[in-house]
Image 1 (cartoon, rainbow, N blue to C red):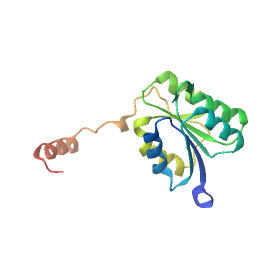
Image 2 (cartoon, rainbow, N blue to C red):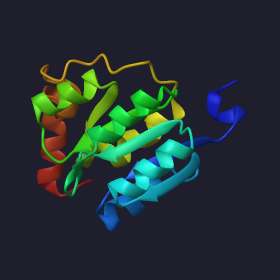
Image 3 (cartoon, helix red, strand yellow):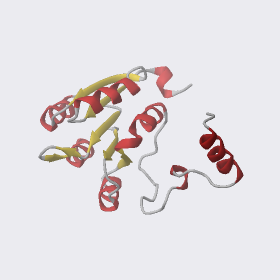
Image 4 (cartoon, rainbow, N blue to C red):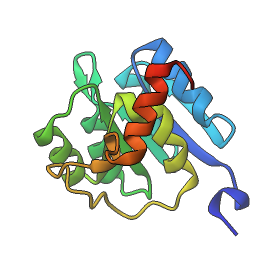
Length: 157
């Protein structure tokens, strides 16, 4: 029996861009109860009053940093997993997020990976090495890649 089958997950999403926030809410809205906020202060007050299963925050929250919300969650000592995402691949930022106990992702991948995070039982911390190149992000080479290239050039999809 999966965790999501036993009860609905509560997700706090903090994203200042309304379009990105709406897209992320739509991506996981059917998987749990999502509260979306644009401002750091609103999210901080909600975190102090309710224990969420997942905190999802952009690292850039205008004059604030999303990592401050992760530190707040860890200080409250609730069992909330956290995902911090950014537009740039920033190794020191990814390491800081991991040290704070959060998972780090890129904004451009969030629509794809956020439902996976919500549906999965997450480990206590992100053990991936952000300094190591992830080959799954690139196109594969070899014969199949060449066949795809030929088909694309011919206009067949």
